[in-house]
Image 1 (cartoon, rainbow, N blue to C red):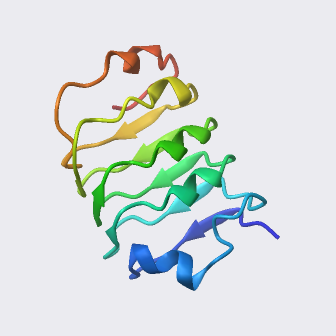
Image 2: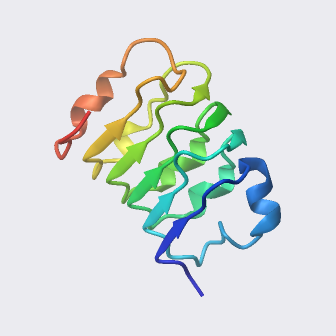
Image 3: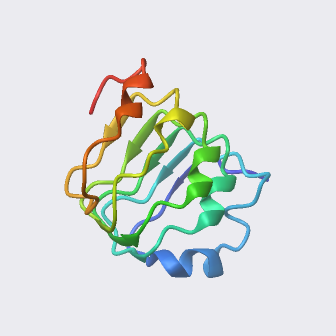
Length: 129
């Protein structure tokens, strides 16, 4: 059984896998995952990269920390990624070549620092940055 759209309000991120252990299973079909404006803390679980059918991922306005997991490059169908208003650390990850379908990217106040990777220019479908 898969999900078409997942939206969770007023929760904590690191507890998400414990509460919904199969949520990031390989067979879940979740093209839309809205977790914005919650009180999520901690890092994004690498298991989220198993959601290979993901098209829309809203993680903004939380208290997420650390880096984006490398496993997110598996989300090759991603069209919208909103990760602003968090407390991520380090440089902006250079995952853009894997997200060729990306149309909307919001990273304002994400916590990432440094120059925007030049590979962002390969995103010919980009409409909102």
